[in-house]
Length: 446
Image (cartoon, rainbow, N blue to C red):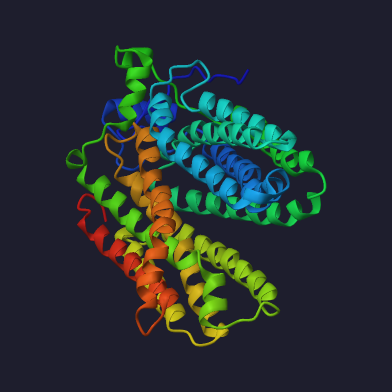
């Protein structure tokens, strides 16, 4: 059982823990500067371990394992089954996150507010991975996917709140940047190891389950968690308070609402500008099938490297620049320029210059926008998990919407002199720029 620290932990008006000496000062008359945290190094390690475990455990199925296993189990309808599985997984993750976020904000366990959700969610993901490793039928694949989606929602709702719980505003950009980079590297490693295990289905999923389990077994006890007094929890049934996770009046928190809209529109631009690179190469630039494989590999390397470089730069700039809103606008302009460069490219090198600009802008956006979100959470940190889950919808829903409406955009573009795929990239660039402009409506923070 994780050791509980029973020493008094004061919490500032944003819900951030402060140590004993700082707590005394806060009780006397407040602190002029942001409080120092009780154990930031422990929580940094815990956050990165969770990102590593989730990245490795969930990205290997998505990138490598699921398409292969579904093709073996249902070769005649593999496309339909894969689409349905990924759709169900995305829907459950998006729909249930606010519910589990509200539960996390009301957790009064002796183990803390966030530890229980992280541990239970991690266990559910492991169960789902093992079911998939043993799956020989389509229903078993859906069952394993269900456990993974539920686990990801529970764990994510709690773990996403750890950053605003534990770290002051001046360091969140770096934490978010390195967290994103850790997830990217985990996905890269999974994409390398996965193909080596294609002949052993149980190992294909079991390795990810093992890595996730080890990371969580270290991270959960290591995490210095918040504790919620039961007296501070609303006196109503637990499920009723959890369903409050879906209640949000945009007018009550205009800054948060504008950041939500900004991220939604920017992410729609990402969906348009990153999902159809292969078809742009073959249909627009007339790359032959023989030339395509190395270009696909190069595009993957550019995507990972560009995102990693952008994330590293953004991790430090987000905590240094005087205005994160301005940084978001810079990201949107860079992505717009990259999308337009790709759209009007007439050669493969120019197209890859455009995609490099796009991926760097995405990397810059992740820590910058994440820090901005945490600075406008309604009610400080009282409902951090709920609102972090809600903002997650602005990241997930536009990817689904983008995939659904992209064919219509391509069809309309095909009627023009530019062609379908260039028009799609132009639409992505415009969406990114609009997303950057919307953030100007935020008034409470810079």
